[in-house]
Length: 235
Image 1 (tube, rainbow, N blue to C red):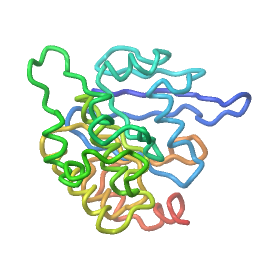
Image 2 (image 1 turned 60 degrees about the vertical axis):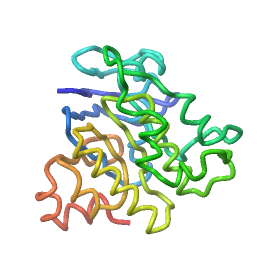
Image 3 (image 1 turned 120 degrees about the vertical axis):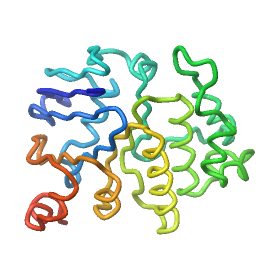
Image 4 (image 1 turned 90 degrees about the horizontal axis):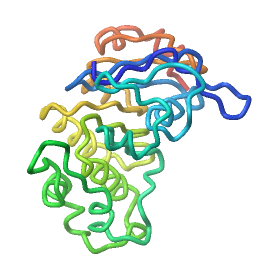
């Protein structure tokens, strides 16, 4: 298994957010993390990426323990994050944003993801190469955030709220890109609210409620259970 999360407990101060969180992603898989707002999805991602230190539990990547490592070490291990809110560098150009995170994977002379490869994936970024981060639309910023994560040449790509707040055409473009990445064998962990798109692209799903895993399974099982979706995912 590429990523294994077991018994994860994470707190902010004295407030416990995750209670024994468990999650797995294998090479080439697309796995979703689902739940209503405030249930612990982003905290799970932040724990995996070393942005918050878990109080207990295990996080292993390719068999090596990464819980407690600094974020840059986790990124170097092969995890790339597209954070909630995009967080592009506002005073850097599109080109500079992409080059800021460029990294060739260990043992590979020619990286898969280069400036040219990212702008082929997202032609709009090529057209806006000289624009600053704060001059981009929300959709362009999300493309840039995905491209920036890809420039680290990750083994596992993590997207927190992949299409939140985006126009329908941009959302469709993001899902097209994620399908293309999956077809290339890219492992992906994705948080989003678009169940139709997620059940189409994902292999497995994990639903959390108040920091607990309440269900996990495949797309067919999730699509066939409207009561489950209403109980844990309905607004």
